[in-house]
Length: 147
Image (cartoon, rainbow, N blue to C red; front, side, top):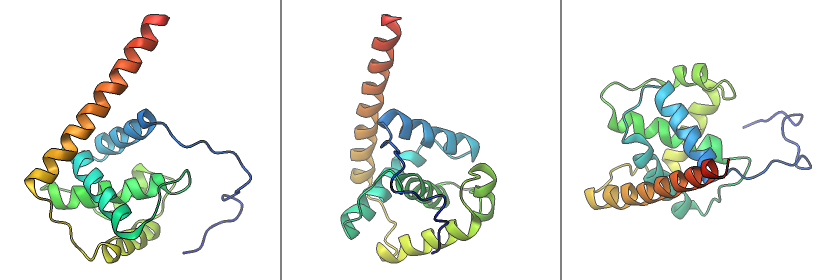
């Protein structure tokens, strides 16, 4: 894939996002695309499957697109009525339909099209996300009580 070197500047400081920021991003995509509440859980399973299979690391440049693709695939597998790839750029203006198609194709090839999730696996990630959500809520409450 090609990229615009004007938009990709290694010297520019871009902080790694916090867990809350990533959670807010997932919430935004999930609500904007009218996805089911289970989609972020399935997304996390797919994301870890990619990371463990390939050794790719999430970083400040790739996390948003990888999370988006995992959300898209999770929606296609889980939801009865999922958006098509052509609709995602309307919600996420920083990605093109070509990028979504290409990243989705690469993702599926990397994981050898293994998208099945066992019940125990789903439950494991549900409780991981539940714990993270509780931690984020506690941080928010602590921050609000200081004000």
